[in-house]
Amino acid sequence: MEKFFTIIGGMGTPATESYIRLLNSRTPAHRDQDYLDYILVNHATVPDRSTYLMDNTKPNPYPDLLDDIKIQSKLDPAFFVIACNTAHYFYDDLQKATKIPIVHMPRETVKHIREEYPAAKRIGIIGTPGTTSDGIYDRELLAQGYEVVKPTEEIQKLTNKLIFNDIKEKNYVDDELFYRILKMMIEEQKSDVVILGCTELSYAQELAHRHNYPIADSQSVLVNKSIELALALRK
Image 1 (cartoon, rainbow, N blue to C red):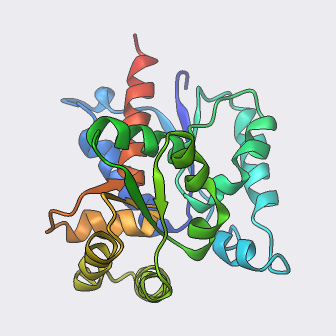
Image 2 (image 1 turned 120 degrees about the vertical axis):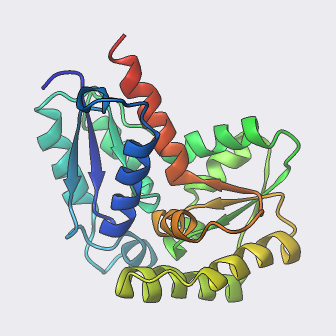
């Protein structure tokens, strides 16, 4: 297979399935051969990224991610995507380990905000504790002149429940909880736009989309960028 890309996924698996569903459904296809060529690495046993970032004595996910990048690089994909926001904490080191470009999901998400919400100034971030505290979105937003809005302790607690207790543990999306979190970020924290900075939240958005809150869905942005780059390979 030539002119393909590699997806580093499995963090978690239902969220990666959501990425694949959106990828395939948005691809302009009328026959088998119109779909995209890609390899999915569903590396479900990668240690939890947020747990490690909050406590460095816990298992480190970086060696597994690095191993995936090195092994897949031997197959010479055109580019990589990493279907996990928190894993982008290791982005610079992973990119140094390969000549193949890795799409930077947080950076693409901030570009999306600039295009879709030109009047936005205060950008909220929700995700795992690792993502909301590790600075990967902060750096990208501040570089573009945005004000960063973090979740309160209460909002983070509710978000943790949705991500870890409901989606990861039970594969269950509590849509009312999801809407409540968005409402709090918009109305109480005064965010102009809320970044869904966790692929489990993107999974919730896919299954429970019945709201009009202004969001930037990082995984949806990654899907669109993947399709753009993959279709360009065919020209």
